[in-house]
Length: 231
Image (tube, rainbow, N blue to C red; front, top):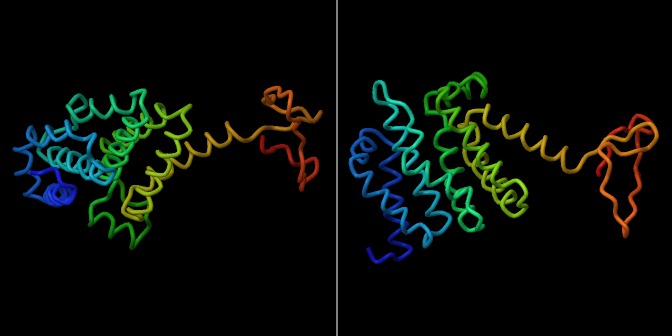
C-alpha cells in the first residue's frame, strides 16, 4: 500500500486476527514467505505495529505446531532475526528485539480458552502450556535478560514490556512464566541493591570505595537482627 500508518495498522490487525484462529491460520501459512518480507520495513514501524507483526509470526508457528509430528523450528528466519536484534549494539534494534520477544512470549505463554476457563474455576496454577512452548518462552526470556544486562535503558524497557504483557493476559498466562520472571527480578534486585551486614558492621559484598560520598546504615528497625541492608 501507501505505507500510511492507518493502512499498516489495518492490514496488520486483519492478519493478526486471521492468525489467531483455525483454519484461517493454516491458510495464512501459505503466504508466510510474503509476510516475512515485511520484516525488511520494520524500522519504519511503530512499537504497536512491531508487536502485531511478531504476534502474527508467533501464531503461525503455533498453528504449524498443531500438525501431527510437527515441532517448533529453532533456526527459522524469524528466530534468527530476533536473536540478531537483541544482540545488536544499537538501542533501537534492541528495542525491536524486546518488542518481538515479549510478543512471542505472550502468544506462546497464553493458555487456550478451555484451559484458561478450567484454571479459573479450580486454580490459576492448574492449566499449563505444553513443555515445548514453555521451554521456548523460558529461553526467550533468558535471551532478553542476557542481552539487556548492563544497559539500564534496555533493561527498563524490557521490564516495562513484560509488565504490560502480564497485565494484559492476566489469568490467561501460564503462571510458571510469571514465577520464572519473579525469581529473575528478585535475584537481580538482591544482587544490585542489597548487601549483608556482618557482625563487625562490614558490608558483604564490600561497597565500592568512594572518595566523595560516605555511606552509613540507618533505620535499623530490628537492631542486631537487621542483617540485610539497602546498598
